[in-house]
Image 1 (cartoon, helix red, strand yellow):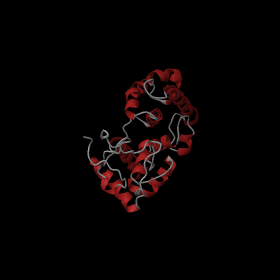
Image 2 (cartoon, helix red, strand yellow; image 1 turned 30 degrees about the vertical axis):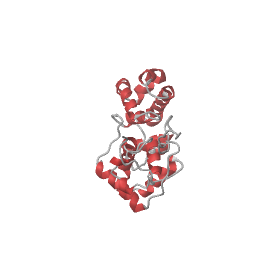
Image 3 (cartoon, helix red, strand yellow; image 1 turned 90 degrees about the vertical axis):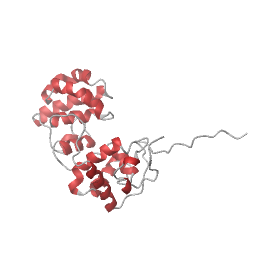
Image 4 (cartoon, rainbow, N blue to C red; image 1 turned 180 degrees about the vertical axis):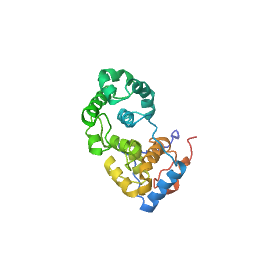
Length: 238
């Protein structure tokens, strides 16, 4: 008796920590890939809700291992209660916590936001520094967070590599690397200087909504012709 037919295994597109890697794009191909994203979205912006460098910094710290949408649901009330570093420091971790209970790691994040707010008041006159070293010295602020703040708040041409950009850089061959720092450095070298500031937004939005983790939606990718990923998904699931 013939065995029952089984469905073919689903393609393994990799994970956030171990994304599938494609061969490295030549520089001209990498530029064409980025320019295709730029043409489709000429004025990209962060999806985080913020009002100034301080509220942006807090929102980015809260967004670690959490979606921007989840952060945006809790920050309006938090920022209304504590719109400045002094007010946030006065609120303290215990006062911040109830506003952000809905997001991941909220207890540690409440402590970090309270601590960084105190340091902004005590060491920087209540202003967010436009300097990488000073930013990374703040509690809860790493290289990725500093890059976002420098890029969005201060107009610097930085490349913040999150899980989406790390996956995308490896999967399509734009900037393969074993660590976020390796991917960042390759992207900075390969991106045309005049596009570098906006490239962070193009790549993160593309990774978030098109080149998704479980199954890339290649059928609607504007840069598909320049992508080196072999297992492209060329049609929506039936």
